[in-house]
Each structure stands twice: as C-alpha cells, then as structure tokens.
Picture 1 (cartoon, helix red, strand yellow):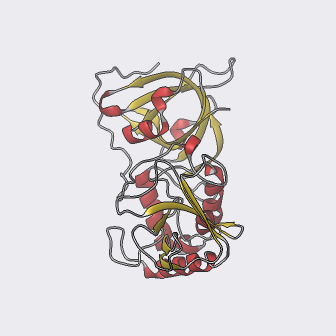
Picture 2 (cartoon, rainbow, N blue to C red):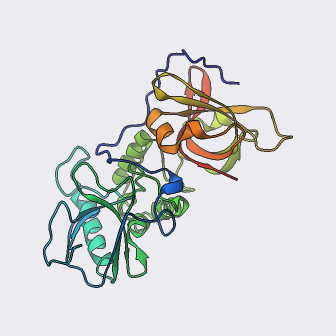
Length: 308
C-alpha cells in the first residue's frame, strides 16, 4: 500500500522542463511514426524547394508558390534536438551542429519528400510546424537519431514507434557516433538527459539497467540511480496535491510476490499519459530512474505503456 496520504507534502524536484514547450502534446497512443493516428496535414512533394537552417529545422515550399515563407513554412523536426549553431542556453556547438546540418541536407535531398504534421502538435511557440519527414524510403527524424546527431527528444510528444527510436539512440551511443563520439560531448548529453529524466538504453551506458524487470525480481537498492523498465500491474493509484500521482506497481502474475514498487508521476507527465485514467489491475510497462526519497526507493516515471 502507498504510504502517502492525500495531504502529504511533496518536495521532490521533477525533471527539468522543456526549454521551448510545444503548444500541445500527444500521448503514445496518438503519437507519431510510420504508424499512429492520421496526420492533420500531409504533403508529398516530388522535388520541393527547401532550405536547411540547422540539423533539426528547415524551410520547405509547402504551397508550391516558388517561395520559402517562414514561419508558416518552417519545419521543426519532432523527436530530435541537434546541437546549436548559434548562441543559446544550451550552448553553441559547431563541432557537432554543422555535421548534423549537413546530414539533414543530405537526407532531404532524396525524393519524394513527405511531410506529416499531427493533431495536438501542429506548431511550437515560434510558429514552426512540428513535423515528421520521410525522404524517399528513409524516415529522416529516426535516421538523425541513429546517426548520432541527436538524442531521442521526447519533450513535444512520444513517437508511436518509441522502441525503434530507443534502439536507434542506443546504436548511436554504442557506436560512438556524432554527439556520442567524444567523452566531453557524451558526458554533457548524459547529464542533460538525466535532468530530463531519461538516458540511452545502451548496454555500455552505466546509467541503464539492462532488460525488463519485474517488481519481485528487481533489486531496487542496488539499482538506485539507474534507469530501468519495470513491468507489472497497477495495484493502487493516488493523486496528491499539485498534480503528482503515486502508483503502487505490483507483479502481473497472481502467484507472484506481494511486493509493490512506488512509482512517482510528475504533473506534466501524468496529464500527458493520462495516468489518472489507468484502471486498477491494468498491466503497464513503466520506465524511469530509480531514486531514494525519504528513505524509500521509488521509480520516477518518464515513459509508460499500458498493455501486456
């Protein structure tokens, strides 16, 4: 059972918020990729006029008038966040940003170029369309992650093919590609992702606990500070003040241990994933960092999937 009452104080620090929040966000059941909900708008352009701005931004002549008209025709790619080419709070990084820009230019040179923009994530605060691209047979957003030009960026939404992006990021990390190639850059991105509540799920990343865990088998004390995937069922769910949700996660098997793992869901993620709508006894796969809080170990949720 959960040890917090509805009136408990709650002093945890949630993951660092997005520096450039989107106008809206979809949960994984409505997210993006080669499958998922139908896009609000879709263009298939045989030989479009375009201009690459940086590794995750480009202008595309969507209306075919022969002109590039930002911000209406400026695209910000979902699921990627490449190094900056100009001064910003994240820091200037030409050494990795210029190769990312070149990679995007090379990828979008293939034709036709398909642009997808989805419900709830049409534009960011700067008016740029948040887009998924396919150039020829290549999903551009996914390929940029696989090539190591960006970590998987989930601040706008989760992709429906989330596992494919996770595998692509792990491949780039292990292959020491792009931003993962040198120690300084790798450590900087690992620290940034830790603030956001996630890490690459690569076997050579010490912060990642490999495999899928069960509540009974998880040695939580030894895994504190590591990112884990834990499968189980919702035994209890409780909303606290300020929008925080606590979940008691138990084993899925009827004969399994009666142990539960406390899962903490911070307000933005609780709303994004619809956690309060999860029924008790629902089977879930939850992932996030294991942390110690007031003497107890908890999992601080970053991503979850309802179902077997």
